Length: 300
Ligand SMILES: NC(=O)c1ccc[n+]([C@@H]2O[C@H](COP(=O)([O-])OP(=O)(O)OC[C@H]3O[C@@H](n4cnc5c(N)ncnc54)[C@H](OP(=O)(O)O)[C@@H]3O)[C@@H](O)[C@H]2O)c1
Image 1 (tube, rainbow, N blue to C red):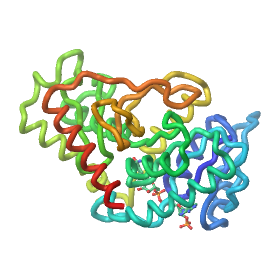
Image 2 (image 1 turned 180 degrees about the vertical axis):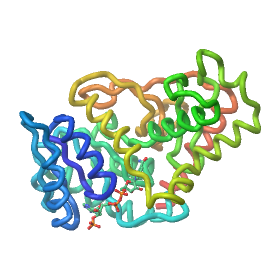
Image 3 (image 1 turned 120 degrees about the horizontal axis):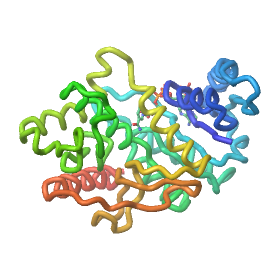
């Protein structure tokens, strides 16, 4: 069973993908009970014929007891200028959710989606002491999808012609797109663009959410699909390599912080942390990003 905490835009989009593909049973847990029940009633009609899966809604955390995976998409409000804007309220919220998960289902694999992503992933792992391999922050894969999309638009190509696209570090203003590894039709991206263009693309990725909000209240489907892919890889034990946030213990030279780095995921959560080669500039930017997150954690 997959429990999804928070039945808002993101939580329900993830639930819809899990149910409509018959991945597993879903439990929606929401602060306002009626919202969880209503969303579950709606998504119930997306269960394919001959499928065994079902979806229910509740505000009762004790019902998460049999979850294999718990996805946290709860939010106390909507930030306007920065993902760290509501940090104190979000940290308080995740500490309460952590208590409930520790009480009812401490052996589940936890996917954190709520913002500020890296801070909440760190706080959740420290509060619950659940193994760091089972507490996974999902965001850098979305940032990587945005990087790939922007490159496809710039070069007027299909996204499939652009490979090795990753964004590491904070899911925030200090995130680091890794230009040195990107191949476009097997050519090195760095041979095709100069530093000014790199800086421009970096700004566009970091501000993607702001551009999107000119047209839509907030993002929903991109993060839902990226989270669904991780859930699916865990449930089906299909190894998946994606950038995700994990509490670091010396990897990439960092400790006491959680940030997006490439990981291999399987049925047990994070099976392996992958240390990819970065150039000097990228390495320095990743250090700054780690320190940015650590400063937030230390300010709590
Ligand atoms: N990682 C990423 O890349 C990424 C991408 C997009 C969004 N996000 C983040 O994902 C989160 C959800 O976004 P959204 O647009 O889905 O927000 P939303 O539509 O406002 O939904 C949040 C839901 O959480 C519920 N909630 C609040 N506190 C709760 C608690 N303690 N227990 C259970 N449910 C609780 C709210 O319940 P009520 O109905 O009572 O208000 C609401 O239904 C946000 O933090 C957002 O910033 C992350």
